[in-house]
Length: 304
Figure 1: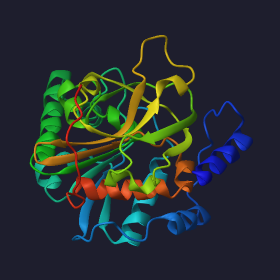
Figure 2 (figure 1 turned 120 degrees about the vertical axis):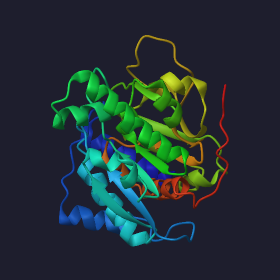
Figure 3 (figure 1 turned 90 degrees about the horizontal axis):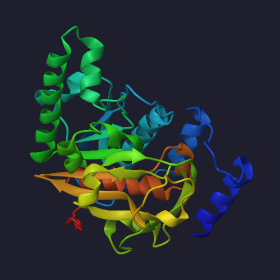
């Protein structure tokens, strides 16, 4: 807990009490060396090395942390020895034959554009001269391919803004656990464990996690609470919310089953500076081992 408090005090000193957007961090040799020193040296569960597809393409809002996350995942893979990383920006990754190669997929802030909020449609439109109705039909095929891949035992790890991949699809929202609604300004966010004894929050040692981030609010299937919540924030602590009713508790990380597959979502973090607290990388590595089926734990849905 003391480390978290010192980290936030330092950020507030540098960036001011309003805690607005943090500056992008360049991928430099010194930054990579720092991440390598902080990354977990070993995965919790000894298991065969897994193949992970990291999809880092976007068509909408660009999160500057995308290339940083690619490098972080490469470092975590190499240092822990738990998995191999394959970075992709290509729609063909979602062909059935290609998905079969991987134990899990990580969505690295692959935000689609509005108003459709349909990543598969966007990527198809960029490379096709087909009529809109044909593009929509083919995009639905890609969505179904991916949902079938998860239902048959694949894993999905969703990083931050990638909760928007198919943001207007209730079917996809039920698979992921929710859709993005909005976020207020960046500010200090204090996340707390729902169950301090759950193995997927062991990285935080019962102290929760405090950092500067975008506090996300959710819609669509989120209201069904068809997931196992891991971390939450208290809505009353958040500044600049919209003038509407909110639950007192907003969940910001969760796990869930979809058929035979597993899904892990973490709203953390818009800012790569959050990884200066190594607990977050440990949390991510545990989440990767969960979606590959190696870290077994209670993922029974909460439900209202």
